[in-house]
Amino acid sequence: MNLVQLRENGPLGVRGELVIRGQAAGMRATLCRCGASKNKPYCDGSHHEVSFVASAEPLTRESEPLAVRNGPLRIHPETNGPYTVRGNLEICAGTGRTVDRVTSVRMCRCGHSANKPFCDNSHERVGFIAD
Image 1 (cartoon, rainbow, N blue to C red):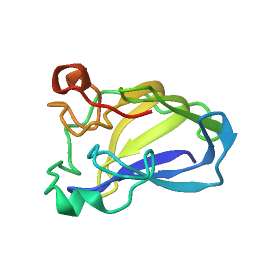
Image 2: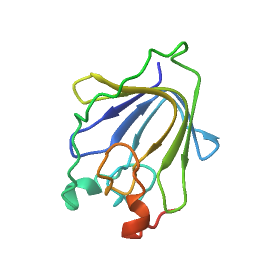
Image 3: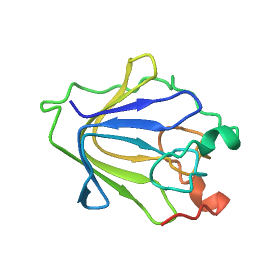
């Protein structure tokens, strides 16, 4: 099953057949969502240094169970923007509760979205820079 698990005040834990920036990336990754990592798109623990705050328990969105829960999970970090994720994906809260089920989503990686873990285009307002 493809899964993103939110970590309280921390990164995105991603599981599945990962393809990041068009390259096979194994079955697990920890992706930065605070915007401060020096090893983007991966977490390097910088969220501790910048006192990043993000709940691991966002509101549940109405969604239907996915017909297929695995397959390639394509993660594309947009230049100066969010992660565009394509593939069958369950987004789970830190407690394991399903937040949403999607086949395409834009997830915040600048750390400023008011709708974390989802992108609300705050990266444009704050001038987020990342390749």
